[in-house]
Image 1 (cartoon, rainbow, N blue to C red):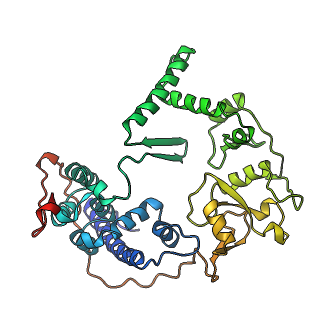
Image 2: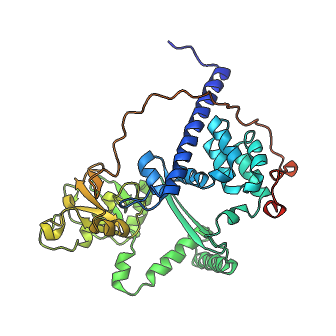
Image 3: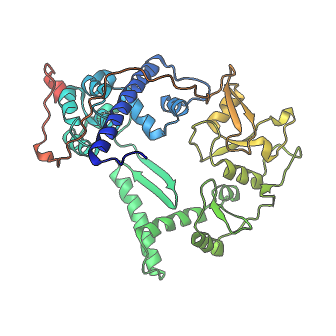
Length: 398
């Protein structure tokens, strides 16, 4: 039986491994910088450098976004990149530096990064360099509006950001008016969130075109065992399903053994009842690492003109971009659409787009990481001060 770890030994082990991970991240960032410089990421169906890295590394899009952000600034941040190669700082620490720190202050910021946690770095740098993020991303107008939507478990999150204060006030007043209308109608506990839902109800109820009304629906799937789930998303708690099935409009979908009834060669266009179930089965574009799940197109794996049936076993969802790319001949699709892992995508040369990773080579000998970690002290931002690098012109340090 192994000896029980004490706090000191555990801290040393975790620190050493953290430093080794940081060194590997530095190597990956250096390769990414070269991939960007040589445009080596471009290929069949690949949308961006981030998309390429998601496929090749298996990392999530937030992590690859950090890798790319840092890789684009490698020449500007030599000091903090040197610390990452030594294993003295982590990927997340360097990502905050890459997001906020001007090149003219790279040395002082790198020194601070060694001793600060990620949250301390974010607070310190964002508060000190107010306009840096906008300077680093001139292609994004400061007035651009954006809406971010995410769903996880039983949580739905919607964030609306805009630099247009008038537009923001307009949205706020619409939500407040809807909340007030609910209160007047007898819902004395109505919240702003209820007001936002009411605004959505009014918008959808105002659609007069039947085809548009049919297109923009919220679909809840039910089965005979009492399970329910939201279209193209996850399972619903029973109390939520009970609430909406009591007051919602139900559209029956005929199924056999849990699958939509086959249409065969009878027609080329996928019927709505089959489309909904194919969309729900795939929950988004089937191309590797594509996150599109909004307006999907149902594709015949074996083309209809080549004798392919309009059956679930021959149908899969693709976003419009990858659907067009496939019909241009950029990549081929093989396998069984009804299996989660049943499809193989190959580029026009026949190489798999999601290759099987070979056995990793033996670890190369490298100097041990110089990992110390944050000091754990409280950050007093009022005492924070950064000096420009020696020799920096005054205009660059301003």
